[in-house]
Structure formats: structure tokens, C-alpha cells
Length: 526
Image (cartoon, rainbow, N blue to C red):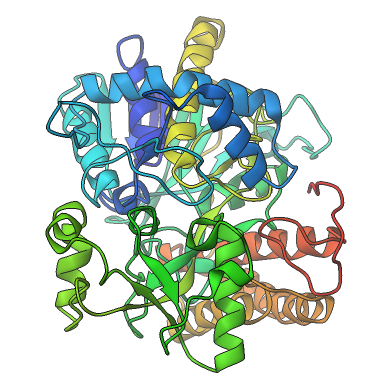
């Protein structure tokens, strides 16, 4: 089956949904996602969205905080652009029905998180992402120009390669014509042709054994763009959220928002001693890379599996009112956060690198945009400032929408694209070959390419990953496609990129900390 559209949007988080709404009045939009439209990384964002709202905060302070957190690798012009444009885009979210908490005066109740010099995080209780997701989904479902297709898995981006032409990463004339998409209900790969293709597939948290990301975060967009010869950069900078709830066996790990530390919660060892001031004068509100490494170090020193986040000194009524979901979740595990410390541990949370894009979200492949967590914009540098990700997503959704609409009438759909060739494939004889390799990839990345790295660990991880890569490619060539097989293949691609870029970065900076290189160096690109 062949389907044609003006805009093909892959992914239904804040970036994909916002983009779809912004272009739907001028063209047909097909919005695909591999599960349901309401499932995305956005949904699980607790803390909020950062933007300058009231004095004494100002743009200069937000810009400076972002640059400091990014540890020297942010693009200052991009930081200035996003920080300046975020307030207007947040205003549009509010117009679309998103509700943020207000105080008794009717002013927005702004939170403060690690690395921020002022209170500037707009939030909705401790489920801001879910509030945004639900509001945007409701609006998308009511737009006549948006066709939403659930349970559709994008397999590969279509370029000249599929017309038998040579495509290289160094070429500047590679074009995207759409994508091959697997219908998970029929097991058939269909051809989606589009004038503009927008990838908003989110991150890759499930590359690690412990992550706050939902199971769908498997790096699909990064892998597709890499295979299509687009440029990927900064993949070594994987952000581990310092505080996920320690509850072995639960996946994804339940996030304990940084806003709780902004509210006054304090990190302590299991014997009740504060430790963060040993590592940074900002204490429990230092940027995430510093806090995650400090917790990792304390766990190694003590031999414990977690540290504590203590809220017992805070006002109990206000605590429960501000963080009702965290309170209920912990209470279900017999932890009363008004009295008992919360056991927490770092977990893979956010990818600061990704598809290299310009100021409008355009990738190095023509007619292909990447927005949201999948993209590397220059905003985050070597470490993302808390709650900047949702701001980045809506700013770039707007810029990509404006840029693509300007170009729309100049583009025609290429109708010469061949349909997917399934070859002589069969169902895998044993699913265990996929599930076992999936687990091994997670263990390799968690043990060797986590918060603290070394040359030896990276070399060992790469050797093991190469074996799994060869096994998986052999299976892919002879098997009927499935979501599990495609996700495994994508995770391996992304793991390879992280490893190679980490090996090429002979320094410690931000989220990439190597015991072999104490000095800072240059950006890596692949």
C-alpha cells in the first residue's frame, strides 16, 4: 500500500504533536506512532518547562544557566534563540488548553531545579508532561487535516538509495521522500510518501537496564537517520537523572522529579549524612551530571544500592499538594515521604546529542526535519539544564513548521519509489534470540558506558556489541519484520554511535566522564 501526504510526522510527543497542529491548516498531516498517540517520553516528564516569566528572572540569567550547565559545548546563538522564543510558545500551549499551577494571586507557581539561578519552571503538580500530552492529543484528534495512525512502526527513511543511487554521509544533496512503515497489526510494510518528513521519535533510554523512559524509547529515529547517511553528533552525552525511585524490577523506573529538590528535599547517605556539598557548593541543586556522579561515587564508597532523598523536614501539607503522584507512589511501597526518606538511584533519562539540525530543525538530509529529544540543536551542549527539553521541543516545532510551510509548494512527491521488498523472509525460529540480545545490549551499556567510563570499558563494550550486531543483522536479513527485531537493531546502531563518539572524545566533559581523561577537548561527530 502507498499513502501520500504533505507532512509525515513520526512520533507523538510534544514536538510531533505541536508540529502537526501548527501545519495542519495548510496541508494534510499523517501522524504515526508505534503504540498509541498518548504514549511518549513527554507523558512522563514530571518537573515542568523552563522559561522566563517574572522578575527578577530575565533572559540573560536563563541563557547563562544553560551555558554553565552545558559545560562549554552549547551553541550560544541557539541558546539565546530558544530562551527568547520559549515564552511565546508556552503561551500558545496555554491557549491550546495546557494548565500550569497558579498561586492564590493567579500568578504561575514557578519551581526551581538544579542549575537554575531563579524560579522559572512552569509545572502542573508533578505530572506536567501528562497534562501537556493530554491537551495536545485532544486537540490533534479534533483536527480534520490530521490522520493519526497508531501501531505503525517506521522502519527506514526513503532516500535516493532506494532508487539505486549512491548516498554518502558527505553528500549534501540527499533527499527524503518519506518512510517505509510497518503496520504492526497486519505485519505489512507500507510506503508513505511525503513532501516533508518530520522525525520526533524521542530518546533512547532503553539502551540501558535502568531508565525513566517508557519501553518505546529505543532510538528508532536516530538509527533511521544514521542508516540514511544523515549526520549524528554528541551521542556520548547521555544524561542520567540523579533520582529515580529505587524499586528493583520496576520498568521504567519511577522518576522522582528534580523539582522535589528545588522544593527543599536533601540528598543523604543511608545513614543520614548530607554529602552533596563535598562535590559542589550548590549542594543538592547542582546540575544533573554532577549530582549523578556524586551519587554514583557515594554508592561505590558505601557499597549501598541507593542513597536517600529526605523530605521529612518540609511542610507535609504543601509537600503532598505539590507532589501528589510521588506521594501516592511511594506510599504504595510503604514509604511516607513526609516522614520517611526516599531511596533513589540514577537512571538513564535523556539524550543530549542526536540528529544534527540547523536553527529550523532541518537535518543534513533535504526535506527531513528532526525535532525534540532526537535532535542535536546546540542548546544542551554536554549536559542539559533541567526542564529545558520541553522548551526546546516547542520552539523547534514552531521553527520547523514555519520553515517547511514556506517550502511546501516548491516540492512534489516522488512517485517512483519502489514498495518494500520483503525478500524470502520467515518468522524467527526462536524469539529468545531477540530478547536475549536485547538484555545483553542493556547490560553492556549499563556496565561499561554509564555514568563513569574508561578506555578499557569502552573497548570491551565495543567488542561485545560487534558480536551482537552481526547476529542481529543476519537475523534481520532472513526474518519477517517485527517491532522487537527492529527495536533491537536500532538500539545496537545507537549503542555503537555512543561508544564510538565516547572513544573519540579524549576528555571528561559534562555527561561524558572518563577516568582516563581529566581535561576538556573538542566536540565529536559521526
